[in-house]
Amino acid sequence: MRSLRYSERLKKGVSPISRQQHTLDHELLMLSVLIILAFVVPVMGIAFAIYVLIYAHKQVTEKWVKILAVLAIISQLPFLVLSPMFIIISIIALIVGFVSKKEPSL
Image: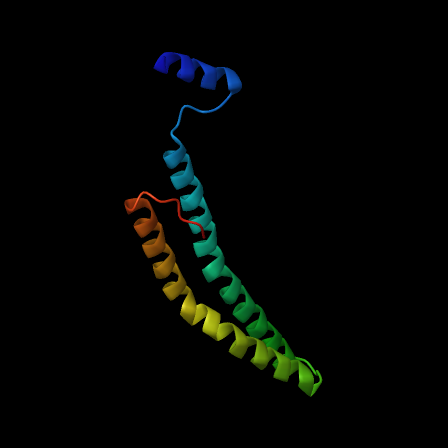
């Protein structure tokens, strides 16, 4: 009877990988994307604001350009500082979810 279920799965195109393994792969992929975004987005924002500040220093621009660039840097710093904490919390939640045999939802 078990082989019939396996062959039925293959006929339907469902992978023979267990649901828990599929969920683990999906969660790890989501975690990887979130880790990358947690670091890349603040770094890109700060880099662009620094570029604008350098440009505004070399070229004649209005005062509001420099003010907004400084505000952009200040607003991105908390995200850059908090991103390692977010990563640690996500990894702990993922480990606890799979150790307790429950499907974690992020």
